[in-house]
Image 1 (cartoon, one colour):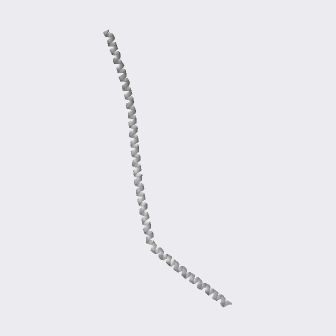
Image 2: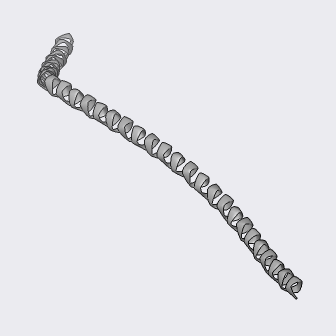
Image 3: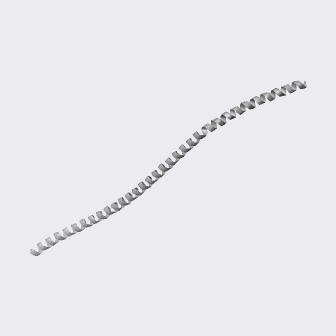
Length: 120
């Protein structure tokens, strides 16, 4: 009887050990799975940080480029504005010369007509 009680107790302990071993295996597998997820997340976080840094650098670069283009545009406008009086003066001079040419062409035409009348 004592032997039977010991066998029963041993079977019960053996069953508990098997259950604990199975649970340890489950927990070990779960730990491996969670570790893999953790490493995957860490990799994703590093990748996202790198991408964010790249975007920030690109944003800064574009802001600098925009500022440079704006500065160049302002310089161009100043330069054009500075040339505006000279351009206006040149346009007036051209207009004056065109009028003189028209007057001279008219005089030339009248002289030709006068010469033709003299020949007749």
